[in-house]
Amino acid sequence: MFLSISVVLLLLILAVIFLRSGGLKVSHALVCLLLGFFLAGTSMAPTISSGLTATADIVGGLRP
Image 1 (tube, one colour):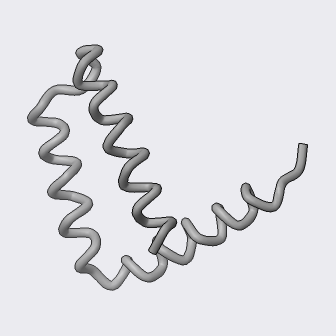
Image 2: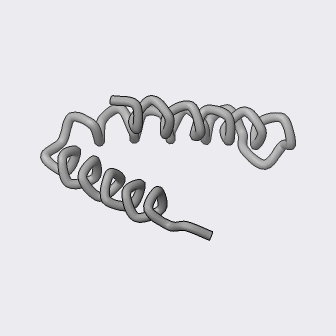
C-alpha cells in the first residue's frame, strides 16, 4: 500500500513539474491518467505491481 501511494505521489510531482516547465501538455497528462486508470483494471495489473515491488526491494537493499 505504501509503495503504490509513494509511486503515485512521485508521478504526480513529476507531472506537475513537466506541466509547469511546458514539457507536458494537459492533454498528454490526461491520456497518461486514463491509460493508468484502465491499465489498473486489466490482467496485467498484478504483474506490474509485483515488478514494481521487486524493483523497490532491490533499490531499497542497495547500500552505498
